[in-house]
Image 1: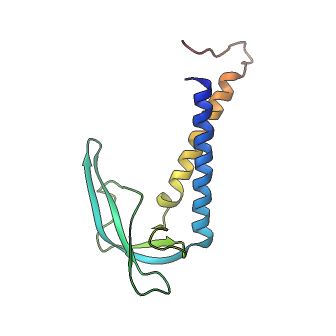
Image 2 (image 1 turned 180 degrees about the horizontal axis):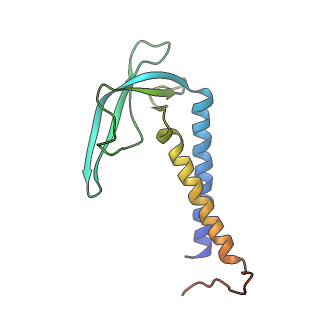
Image 3 (image 1 turned 30 degrees about the vertical axis):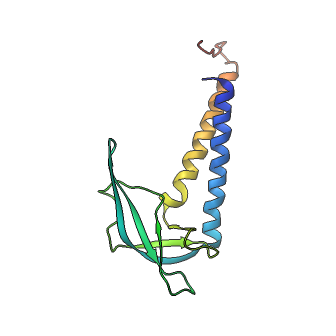
Length: 143
């Protein structure tokens, strides 16, 4: 892989991972937690198999009307949420309709962790590839 492209991917993934980490920390620090309920599952079937994305309804504190949102995480239909199942919800008070998510590890931390690890691995791979070995072996790019 071209060195510049690998560095771009590494810094891009790491930067976006840190941005997503900051977003998750905002939810952890400033989010309001309530219990919602799964009202629908949006099913999808493709070449990778079955998946579902839950639609959750909750009533924000200091509000009377319920708010619905579609989870950003799709799960395998065997391990997904059931309609009627209560779920923990965290939202930012400024805009509950657009700033809500299921309060769980997948929704909060999976994306930031994967992006950050991918970025670090790409940068580490480039560092290793550009550093001469102790044993006289030098990495070379194939043309």
